[in-house]
Image 1 (tube, rainbow, N blue to C red):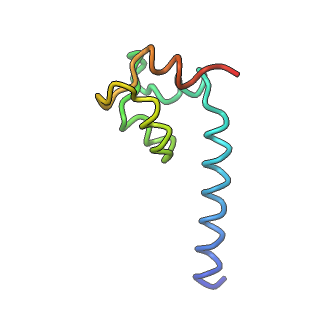
Image 2 (cartoon, rainbow, N blue to C red; image 1 turned 90 degrees about the vertical axis):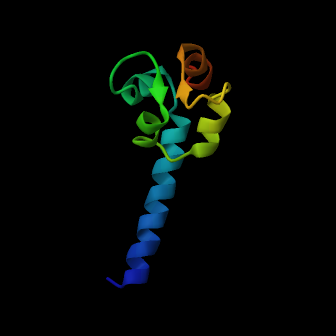
Length: 79
Protein backbone atom coordinates (compact mmCIF):
# COMPACT_ATOMS: atom_id res chain seq x y z
CA UNK A 1 0.00 0.00 0.00
CA UNK A 2 1.37 3.40 -0.91
CA UNK A 3 2.28 5.80 1.88
CA UNK A 4 -0.27 8.38 0.71
CA UNK A 5 -3.03 5.75 0.73
CA UNK A 6 -2.07 4.66 4.26
CA UNK A 7 -2.04 8.27 5.44
CA UNK A 8 -5.45 8.97 3.90
CA UNK A 9 -6.89 5.84 5.52
CA UNK A 10 -5.44 6.80 8.91
CA UNK A 11 -6.85 10.33 8.70
CA UNK A 12 -10.32 9.14 7.69
CA UNK A 13 -10.34 6.49 10.43
CA UNK A 14 -9.27 9.02 13.04
CA UNK A 15 -11.95 11.49 12.02
CA UNK A 16 -14.65 8.82 12.15
CA UNK A 17 -13.52 7.65 15.58
CA UNK A 18 -13.33 11.20 16.97
CA UNK A 19 -16.83 11.99 15.72
CA UNK A 20 -18.29 8.80 17.16
CA UNK A 21 -16.58 9.36 20.51
CA UNK A 22 -17.66 13.00 20.74
CA UNK A 23 -21.26 12.01 20.15
CA UNK A 24 -20.94 9.50 22.98
CA UNK A 25 -19.89 11.91 25.75
CA UNK A 26 -21.96 10.85 28.75
CA UNK A 27 -21.40 9.97 32.38
CA UNK A 28 -20.09 6.52 31.43
CA UNK A 29 -17.47 8.21 29.25
CA UNK A 30 -16.55 10.52 32.12
CA UNK A 31 -16.05 7.55 34.46
CA UNK A 32 -13.73 5.91 31.93
CA UNK A 33 -11.74 9.12 31.50
CA UNK A 34 -11.34 9.56 35.27
CA UNK A 35 -8.46 7.07 35.50
CA UNK A 36 -7.74 7.53 39.20
CA UNK A 37 -11.47 7.75 40.10
CA UNK A 38 -11.03 10.97 42.10
CA UNK A 39 -14.19 12.58 40.68
CA UNK A 40 -12.28 15.00 38.45
CA UNK A 41 -10.84 14.71 34.95
CA UNK A 42 -7.47 16.28 34.31
CA UNK A 43 -6.51 17.49 30.86
CA UNK A 44 -4.06 14.59 30.66
CA UNK A 45 -6.79 12.04 31.47
CA UNK A 46 -9.08 13.65 28.89
CA UNK A 47 -6.43 13.66 26.16
CA UNK A 48 -5.89 9.90 26.51
CA UNK A 49 -9.42 9.43 25.18
CA UNK A 50 -10.15 12.45 22.99
CA UNK A 51 -8.33 15.07 20.99
CA UNK A 52 -11.39 17.35 20.83
CA UNK A 53 -9.82 20.38 22.48
CA UNK A 54 -12.77 22.59 21.51
CA UNK A 55 -14.99 20.42 23.72
CA UNK A 56 -12.42 20.54 26.54
CA UNK A 57 -12.24 24.34 26.34
CA UNK A 58 -16.02 24.59 26.44
CA UNK A 59 -16.36 22.21 29.41
CA UNK A 60 -13.50 23.65 31.53
CA UNK A 61 -15.51 26.75 32.36
CA UNK A 62 -13.23 27.99 35.16
CA UNK A 63 -10.11 27.35 33.01
CA UNK A 64 -8.19 25.55 35.77
CA UNK A 65 -7.16 22.58 33.61
CA UNK A 66 -9.39 20.14 35.52
CA UNK A 67 -13.02 19.19 35.01
CA UNK A 68 -14.65 19.19 38.44
CA UNK A 69 -17.91 17.44 39.36
CA UNK A 70 -20.13 20.31 38.14
CA UNK A 71 -18.26 20.70 34.83
CA UNK A 72 -18.45 16.95 34.27
CA UNK A 73 -22.18 16.93 35.02
CA UNK A 74 -22.81 19.67 32.47
CA UNK A 75 -20.27 18.54 29.87
CA UNK A 76 -21.03 14.82 29.99
CA UNK A 77 -24.78 14.97 30.41
CA UNK A 78 -26.63 11.74 29.80
CA UNK A 79 -28.71 11.79 26.65
